[in-house]
Image (cartoon, rainbow, N blue to C red; front, side, top):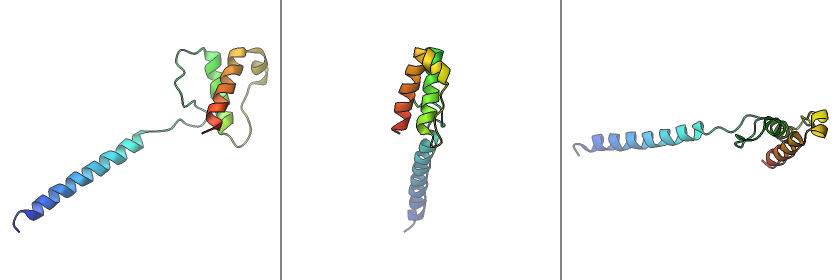
Length: 92
């Protein structure tokens, strides 16, 4: 049939383009690197954000925890951030 190979080539290219777009979209979705919070912490105080990052690193680690013990005991925002980060990242 004349013209059917051109139609088949067009359909194949369209399918290939769709698959490549899907794969590229999945590749663009990156997870947070270890130790980095997988949540938006804008607007939180720096002490909370640092505690959250340390807690998250601890939750993801198999080697132990990352925590500034002195700061954890003396800085409530750091301690709260650490606990939140740990619980969120431990469950992932």
